[in-house]
Image 1 (cartoon, rainbow, N blue to C red):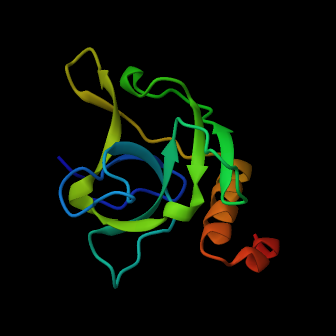
Image 2: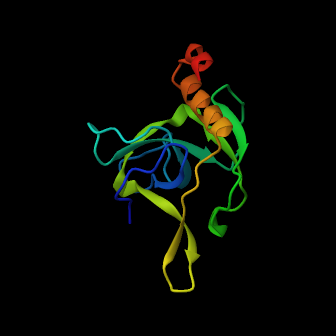
Length: 142
């Protein structure tokens, strides 16, 4: 369906990389990602994300970090343990992004996961993104 508003930085969302335009070795399926930046007025309907993976990298690099998401994920996404893929940062259109659906309340209204990562964990994600862009020297400013 896609989002209408830019989620806050640190929010975990689902990004659909399978909807045309992406080819291997790029991401090519639906996966969880962390919103990296706040809303930027000059970039309407885009958000910058850092993808997350269930699979441990073959060779762990400074832009990889294992995190344990400290809040509920929808059952379809499995365990809360994920690997940050800081080398795969990208800007995606709102049409590719969806909030995590937790189910429905007693009145039948959809419940979405809107919690953000704690500050220390989000700092780790940002550091991975800097390492992945070859900007490791900037991590000291986080």
